[in-house]
Length: 375
Image (cartoon, rainbow, N blue to C red; front, side, top):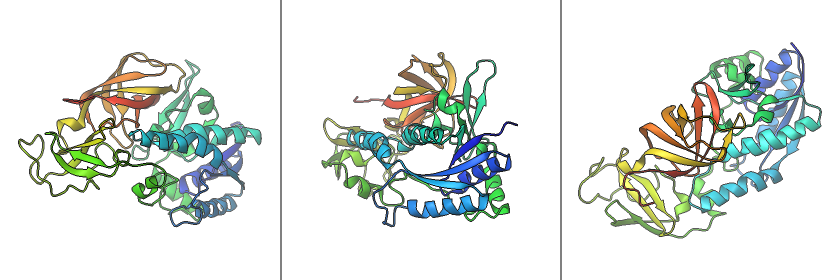
């Protein structure tokens, strides 16, 4: 086995810690880098970067590798956070973790690693990379632990990035990762997995957005056009949202499609032109179900769009793969027609395409088709 100089992104979590250990055990020259991507709120209860660095440094000590602290906050603010704010202001719901992977972890971080002499980089993502000998292409595969697979977040990686990247824990189950961490005495063996967007942390999401996005209150209407409440600004809501609507006791008027008098309300549409938030009762209301979607800003792992045909797709993380047909595939955009209608397909989120265990790439949902759509 050829040994490499590998730079590992140490986040302070158990997955990247075990990644470093496994590579060191295989005989590679391993160096750890802690990425600082957010500078505001460093001293607040919601920002854990300082604690994470202490954990990452402790891991490096146990594994026996050097660690470097690198600040990518300026790149992050320009290339991830600015896009996040633009999308929310426009009424869409972006996924900054996907953009962070493409622009920071596998671009800024990769570039820095190459500058310090790395041949490869590695992270603690649950995914795999395989070289297809027949095509000569590097394929992005799902992680073997279906419950932890993170290929959805990595679908924008290109051939150059995939060729230089290793995902050691993608070959393991999460339970095995924690077992290894415990066996070698890692201090973060039982550390809770991080959740949510890194720059928001555990704080209330609406409170955070309030600091950056202008808001214009307007009416909340049901499917009959009746005004049943007032929203605080369309940017603060997402399709399928059930909590925080402030209309829990309102009864629906007239015939119910998918709901009764006490059935919960869900956000179904956002009319940015009229500043109206449309809500419906019932999880399976037709307005919440989409038979097809259009996606833009496509990115394909192979560098070219796949052929039209039968595939599977996810329109959100942790969703079961949904059988679909790929229509009008293009380098920059595509359309998907699903066998079964998909719930709360949300503009701004990513539609990611799969051929079995192979992640082909995806794009940003630009339009979802619904029954009786006013769009």
